[in-house]
Amino acid sequence: MKRAFTLTAATLSLAVLTGTAFADGHIDHAIKARQSQMNLYAFNLGALGAMAKGQVEYDAEAATKAATNLVTLMSLDQSMYWPQGSDSGSAKSNTKADMWANFPDVMAKGKATYEAAVAMQTAAGTDLEALRGAMGALGGACTACHKAYREPMN
Amino acid sequence: MRRLSRYVVFLAIVGISVFWLVTRPETLPGDALDGLVADAGRGEQVFHAAGCASCHSAVGAEGEAVLVLSGGQSFPSPFGSFTAPNISSDPVHGIGAWSAMDLANAMKHGVSPDGQHYYPAFPYTTYARASLQDIVDLRAYLATLPASEIASQPHDVGFPFNIRRSLGGWKMLFADSTWVTEAPSPELERGRYLVEALGHCGECHTARNVLGGTDRSQWLAGAPDPSGKGNIPNIRPPAFDWVQADIIYYFESGFTPDFDSVGGHMAHVVENLSKLKPEDRAAIASYLLALE
Image 1: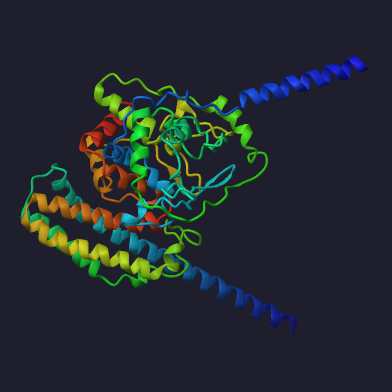
Image 2: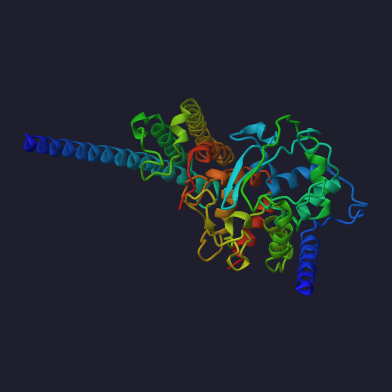
């Protein structure tokens, strides 16, 4: 009887361990996925930003390509990137737990960023002045979320 | 025995007198602002350069709401948590009843209109370098901003830091209104004024000693974030390796050279910097690059 109990306990704890391991992997992958998404934003913003800064000559076609990529990326369903328990208090992440407590605000900020990207799509093909202005709006939209929901980084 | 006790009493009196003298709040002479004419338009630029709204706007305020200086944001520190007060134009709950002299004494000496020391969470050790003309202009601009009737919240500071008088001793040890760096050109002088007087960059980007005094030998070389999470970056070359155009673009748009965006409290700072004149953003960048 005692032996059976020990065995059951061992099996149970193993199951719990596996469960945890699975959950951790799942969380880590989600964090990696959203960081990858941010890196893809950064790459395309970089192409536009280099023109805005005057480091690369304005090229309507290249700018439109980058802006279209941004709109496409922002159209992806990101809900699976942000599981419960993937905040800075529970995982290796810089995202404040506040983000999960303020869902409507997060959605509003996300929508504003998407709209700024759509505006950039038009501006990118117009001229350098328009691109510069749209870049300012995109910067503001990215900042709004990072200001409210990102921890200080190392 | 009697002689000894008399001696002890004498020493105690001397000690208390010295403490009283050293910790006495210092203020400007009564005629310090004579002849200065206020310009609210110029005051608006001073307001953005000094970053008043970053700390005194309500928690989470966005857009025009950041101009309602109702206070309420809290700032953790090893000495306790400080809550920014209401400095809106309301005469009862804000500072609407203050004179330009009251604002000058607060900013340059950290002393309230009723003669109390302020905690240096309010960066008067930096604002001490601000010009009186700028303070007079700022006073005029602040009067044009909305009033808020939200009451200021008390700080959460334990013994012995809750004895305000002892801040007089702290000021004697750590308040130093001399410039930190040399400024060999007009542009560097302007950059120095924006960084070392109004912008108070050193308040967060410079490490502090155990009593909270900034360590000038570590000027702008970064520090642990007072929230206990993460670090405030080193912005002193060569560790800080951004080029002039990158720094200026960051101040303007919030984008870092690798196209991440600014976040956290620095997002407030960039919001302010983006409202300055382009030559002022360039002057700050030049100042930082000249620190090498």
